[in-house]
Image: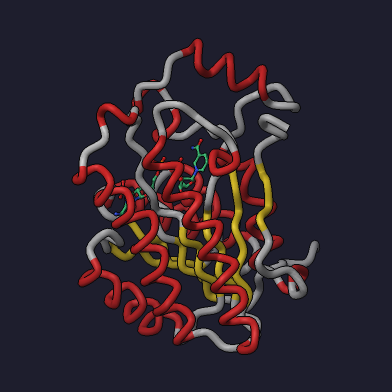
Length: 251
Ligand code: NAP
């Protein structure tokens, strides 16, 4: 039997009801972690992720909390400790992306993006760091977009740039406690956030494929191997890093 890379660990993944977060939750459980599947709205989907993990012999619970609402964040961590007794891995993954050109930017759209994608990440990291001991791993899901100039995504890109710099500060602050912090940066990945549902056209998809060295759009499952690595003790000497998981977009 092959080794399970996350055996004995407890992982909390924000925004794990759908897309990349759901794929990470399922794979972490298959790698032996006990998993907290956070969601804000998609209860049915979160319960389906948990049911799939449980049916495969893993351990998981679903916990509702909107990470854009600071008052809902502490309960997420209380529920984690109540169910599993500790926390080893936090994946800050829940984020929002509205397509916004500068002419359409409003104070409300800036606050909404930063409230989930930056404040939510930081407050979750704060709670996690209080609970973690040496060996803890914080994975902030950023985006390859922070190293591009992508028209129509100025606010979202600003949040992802903030994640890049704040992760390096977290790595420096938490390193002495033995806690690591890294950015996992997907490229164009087929999820609700990045599909016709979010206003993406077939033409834009073709342009992104042409800009990607491996010549296709990523699937959520393409992202999870790097997440397992960053969460595991195999990455014990990796902190403050920015890992590109984009198939080589705009190299
Ligand atoms: P998605 O398909 O839109 O899924 C987003 C997930 O986050 C859902 O489970 C959603 O749950 C949850 N969520 C949203 N707002 C939340 C909140 N306030 N509190 C708690 N959960 C919340 O997105 P995705 O494409 O999988 O993206 C996941 C991460 O990858 C994000 O950080 C995104 O920026 C990043 N990323 C994505 C791409 C891409 O091409 N897809 C590329 C680069 C980076 P509910 O439905 O329950 O609200």
